Length: 284
Image (cartoon, rainbow, N blue to C red; front, side, top):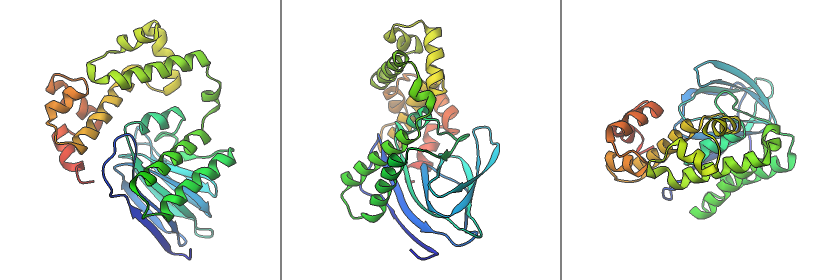
């Protein structure tokens, strides 16, 4: 592709909850070409095919950090995060990107250490990295493929991305603790709508709540309470966006029989009340 050339496409073939692509593309940038500052509504991953450039991004506290990136590396942009990125003047980058979202994305990225405070993708697992790139290229090069094909390749892209950046801590965590964490997450996934508490989750694993909270936070960088809230609020956002359920019905569907309590929790997570969030995001 000659500079400056861009190929992109938007996925517009229905709504899916667990994982859904929104946009994918490839761009050969001219020297100094910049994008931002801008805030995204979804997750956006860039993989650098050639050249180099700079990412300027904010973390969870609003602190701004500058990252210098080159070929074989990448960066994740998170929903609501403010960032700017620009191509090098002497060796401008060419990158490929996928914009996506889903109720399991946030937790999956957190488990492998990708967060607003650590958005850079680097790996020494070349085979998995190359497989990830091939899945990204498929999305860009097969824009007329069926919806299920495109979603399937998005799953493969995310799988290769996650497996290629598993941290050493993740790989060496005690396997029995891993079993407890997986059991807890499965229990939350299957019962979040039933008003369960952290005590219920700990009891399901057979662990003391204090010890359970300690190993859960060590594995996910979140307390069990925050994980449960985030899971419910992410699910609620999907229901608000994809269904015509009332705010009260959405609240009850994610384990909040009291609409006021649900609205407060939702605003605490997203900064907007459910009705306002639905108005702003329904057509994004």
